[in-house]
Image (tube, rainbow, N blue to C red; front, side, top):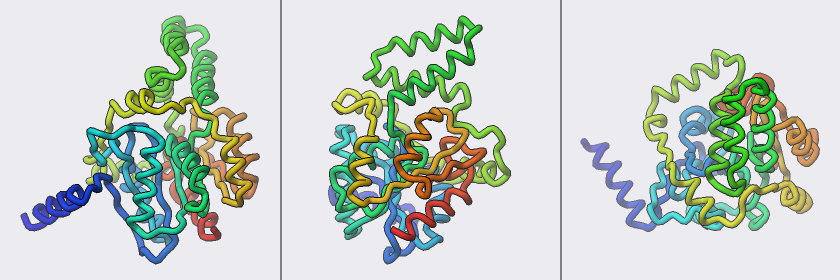
Length: 306
């Protein structure tokens, strides 16, 4: 009862002070700060927190995980779902934790948020890590659909499903959802041979408290595509500008992540540089779970130097 009262009091205090973002920190605040930026729109940081945040903090980093406004545990009926709103909330995190600079560790859609933020506020970012992160949206959608058209070249029913998605408005949330739904149905996000370690991480997560708070706002993508003018972004020109400002860019991707073509991977490897890129075998989209040791080792080596 006492712990429940304390939890309710803390939650009330956070909202009473005008802060309605879910934020949790891991590790010593004196260590190098790393802000994890989750996927979406409509996602959350629960999988990262439930499997990886503390393990990465144990390597000597101060990990800050949060859910974007209106997504996951940051419930806000007035959320605007725009990049600018995400930038201002990131700035509020910098202010709350008295950060001058931080490493941005971005996953999936979070890569676009992190890249656009770094371009606008380069003085706040010591390094940008793209972990299975999006950088050329239309190429990703084209790759998903083209791969499936080849796979089902003799299956008229499947081709009909693909054709319906392909003919949707490419700037709509429905098109994005259709592409990712097809990718999910066809195992694009799963590794072919799960390891014992990854199986345990997923099982422990699903049995733990973070999975119980795995809140998904299905309206978030719809509102984002309604309110945000920028869509189907190719962020590579911005990444080149960021690199020219001497902000290190690192890329870490899974070889079995079905949403990226080999041409896309080659382009981001060339942009980041060979020493700033890791391509992990038997690893898909959730690489911090699929191959956690290799993920943490790579990220640690990079960000400890920047």
